[in-house]
Structure formats: C-alpha cells, structure tokens
Image (cartoon, rainbow, N blue to C red; front, side, top):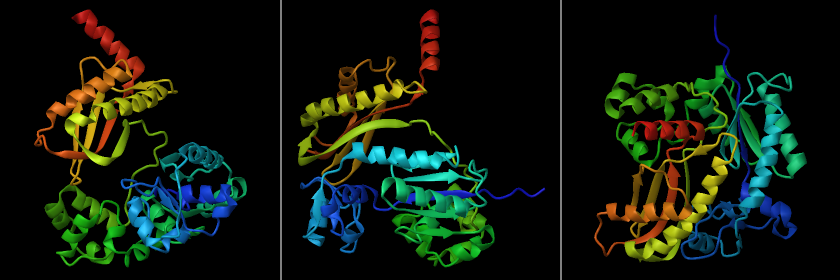
Amino acid sequence: MAVSPRKIVHVDMDAFYASVEQRDDPALRGRPVVVAWKGARSVVCAASYEARRFGVHSAMPALRAERLCPQAVFVPPDFVRYKAVSRQVREIFARHTDLIEPLSLDEAYLDVTDCKTGLPSATAVAEDIRTAIRVETGLTASAGVAPNKFLAKIASDFRKPDGLFVVRPREVLDFLEPLPVERLPGVGKVMQQKLAELGIARVVELRAVDARELERRFGRYGRRLHELSLGIDERPVTPDRPTLQISSEDTFEHDLTLQDLAPHIERLAGKTWAACEREAAGEHGRIARSVVLKLKTSDFRILTRTTTPAERPASARGLAEIACMLRSRVSLPPRTRYRLVGVGLAGFVDRDSHEAQTELFHRLA
C-alpha cells in the first residue's frame, strides 16, 4: 500500500524585524529601514525591502550598509516586541496543526497532513495562515507548500514578499531540475566550488552523477546530495526541539587580549545564567552540564573551548569562573587579540534524570 506524501508548509515572515518597525512607526513606511545598532562592530539584524534594493542584507556590517544606503534609517532591535509578534504568529499556526517546528522567530515548518481545521489542502491552509497573519498582526508572510521540508523552504522564497508557491508531488523533479546547486541545503561556497570542479552547477547535472561516485568523493553527504537532487527528504517536522545550547556573546568596539576578557565573560555569564534559569523553570525542567567559551580573533578565526565539570555551575559567578578558566586552553600567542567573546551552557538533560544520577553517584561514592 502506497504511503501518501506529507503536506508540509514553510512560512517565512517578510523582512520581519524591519516590517514590525515599519508597522509600529508610520514614519518609517516606504523608507529604507535597517535594524541594527550603529557602530563600527555592529551587524545588520534585518533590512526592509526598500533597503535591500541598495544591496543591504542581514549579517552585513552596519558600516557597509550605511555606505550602500546613506539615506537608510537605522533602528536598534527590540527583541521583546519581535518575540511577542512571533508568539501571535505561532498561535495562528497552532489552529491548524500541533506539528510546528520553529527555525527562528520569523519562520517555521508545519506538517498539515492531518489538519485540525479540516481545510481541503495544504495550499488552502497556507492561504488561511497568510490571511490571518495579515489581519491579526498587520504583517505579511510568504509560504511554500511541498511534500517535504527542504522543498517547502525553497518554495517559500519563490514568491517573496507576500507570496505563495506550491510544489506538488508530480512536479518535484521538474521544479528542481533548473535550480543552481547552491539552493540545496548544505551547499555553501566551498561545496559549490567542489561541485563546479566536477562540472556540476545545476541540480539536473548533479542528478546525472552516480550516487556511489558522490559518496566516494563527499562521504555520507554525497549520498544526501543525490537524494536532494531527486527531491527526497524524509526528515519529519519536529515540534519543541530540545534546547541544545544557551549562550550570550558580544563584539567589542576595540579588539582585546585574552587577559582583558574577564569582565566581559562575567557580564555575559550573568545573561546566560538568567536564560538558563528560565529554561530550568520551564515545562521540561532541563538543566545544562557543560560550559562553553567562544572566541573570535581579530582575523575572524573562531575558537570554542568546552568542559563538563564534575559539579555543574551553581550560579552565574560559578559559570563565569569556569568560562574564565577555559582561557587557559587557548594556545594562541599572548599578543593575539579578540573581537568577540561568548559564554554558553550546553549538554542539557532533564532535571529529574540528572538529580537521580547525582544521588546514585553519592550513594556509591
């Protein structure tokens, strides 16, 4: 008996942070808005479509955005407001399905194979969601509908902004055929170059290469590339993914030495600890076991150092002490300077399980 394909919707809010700012301040509408703190080390969080016409995009240095678009209006981010709107949107999703997998504040996968509202198709669900978002939040969203997650995500980008694109099961191979390989998940600049060296620039050319040859060259990801070229993606929509890491980081106005980082590590440890306490107080009561120190050098090299102490940190101060200690595991020359530091907690486990194991250890000791 044939299994019916899944019905997946990927919803992506249009220029989310910038759109919230334009909605809440009529003076910003129609103007190039850049959501970012001004400063030499700041990066763009979001750009309105008016700003994007000048080449401004998220993750770009704010100084470069200012050069590209001198008339841009810079607005500092307000994540409290953005999270509130994101919750509104999530409530709209939940009317249709419980299978919601958020990717960020502004996008999510939904499995609507068994829709709670009884709408006749995934396309109808996507249209209903987009209409509700417009009416209830005053914002627009784009959506992609497809038999699996990776196709739905590609599709949602095809009619941006404020659009809907549908890939039906019978259309999958034709839809993928002309696409450049960089549209496939995991194909960044390095993999794109490696494929180009093999004469592969489009999905149709990738599809023509034997799966065993791709696997020989690229390992397990080669097999994955072959599957993607055929539109195969069996990953389910996974709601409420467990927290893997909570962290806080900061980019400095001026590069600092390793020894200069202590006060910044202490401050970031406080922020990370507060966020971790909220996680521990939540429904699942998960706690972290590992401490992570992240560093970025002045030449953009990223380092991480992690430790799992016998006793998990009991306070923000304890977290800061362990994170500061991790600096001793950095073997770069003392003159090395750093532009960013981050402090994180990882290795989350259920509180009940952790406490039971700790009690057993003490009994056996």
